[in-house]
Length: 323
Ligand SMILES: [Zn+2]
Image 1: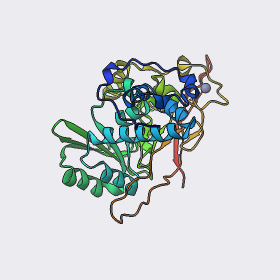
Image 2 (image 1 turned 180 degrees about the vertical axis):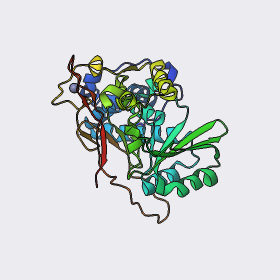
Image 3 (image 1 turned 90 degrees about the vertical axis):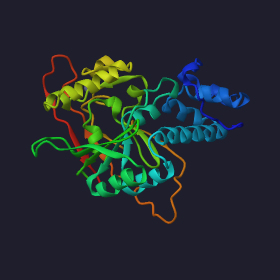
Image 4 (image 1 turned 45 degrees about the vertical axis):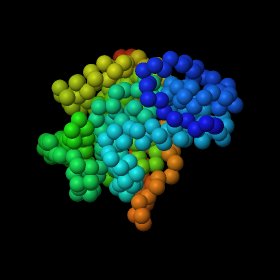
């Protein structure tokens, strides 16, 4: 695909509509357009659609890879000075970036949520490295630090640091579980169950997420975790145009025995319903070894009330970290 795709500066003016089922028809035609038009089209596509387009032709694959690479640079670059160095840190420590930054990258750029802050999830063993990086290298100040309320709290979160640098806000969430991803599975709804790793972008409920549908995590009401903060967080996604519900069938029908979108399904981060976009290889700094390419596989079940009408059985949620 030539010329090379560049992201547009003005996402407000994009009006091009590309039907999602027609990706193959773009094959061969896209590079006849000027780079600005190519970018306008890509800005309308969510990651599953971009992945379909990339499969149609080697040139399209190259163009989409460049486009996604640049989008990730832009998103992370809004919060860190040196994206390459930050990605190397991600690679060394297995930390992940989640919440609005990751959701932004899963959605089509033209329709993506506004980027306000960045949430970074890490395992507690890297607390010193992480805090040193953000304070010393990036120049952030710690505005607040909170710890897990008490030992009976079912939350997997140990500590939350709130950092600021001018207008920029970064939250760093530490867990003592073996994987930084675990807190994301306890979060308020499926819309935020996406994360950026050093080499990939992962969406655990890609179909719902790209259609702006979101299931409230049953944990929130079955484990008595609802508080004003979680309600505010849910309302934020409603304001962002998401259909947020506690009832899975309001988001479309599913076969409880088969579907990954049944809250009682046992899922894992490598199953075919998990969307994974692989970025270009990360440039490592000097001779720093790359160690966290393969993260542990996480299995989970959202649980909650039986799907069928009048069903009053409740299955409990679980999260396990595999080797
Ligand atoms: Zn079901």
